[in-house]
Image (tube, rainbow, N blue to C red; front, side, top):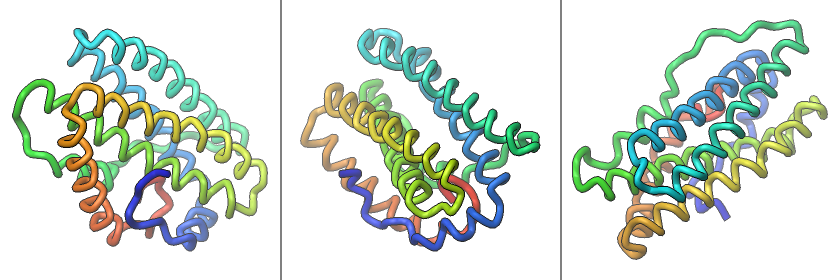
Length: 193
C-alpha cells in the first residue's frame, strides 16, 4: 500500500529497544516538524483553500501526537533530549531541483511529505509488531493509522494540484531515490535513520 521500494530491516527494532529514550525523543521532534510542515504549507500556499483547511486539522493532530509522545517520555521519568538533524529528511529533500513554477514547488513539497509519512507509517508498523514493550507497541499501532492517512492525503493533494501522469512519474522516481537513501540507514534509534 505504501509503495516503498526498500522495507526496513526488522532488526532495526532491536536497535530501538536498546534505547527507547532516544527513539521517543526523536519521535517527539518528528511530530513537531510535521506540524511545522503543515504550518509552512499554509503560509506558503494560502490560496489553496482545501489544502489550508486540511493543514489546520493536521497541525492540531500532529501537536496532539507530540504531546502523547512527550507524555510517554515523562511517564518513564525522562526529559526530552535536544533535537538532532534528521539525515533521512536532509537527503530526501535534495531530490527535486529548486525553482520551477509555484504549482510544481507545491507538488514537490507534498510528495516529500507523503514519502516521510509513508516511511514513518512503515516504521510504526514494525514497532507495533516487534517491540517487546506491549504498551509502546500498542501506542505505535494507533499512530500507524494516522500516518497512513497523512501519506494518502499528501499524495492525493499532489495528484490533485499537479498533472496526474507527471506527478505519478515523479512519485516513482522519488520512491526509487528513497530506496537508495535507505540502504545506508536503519542503523540508529531514530524514526527515519
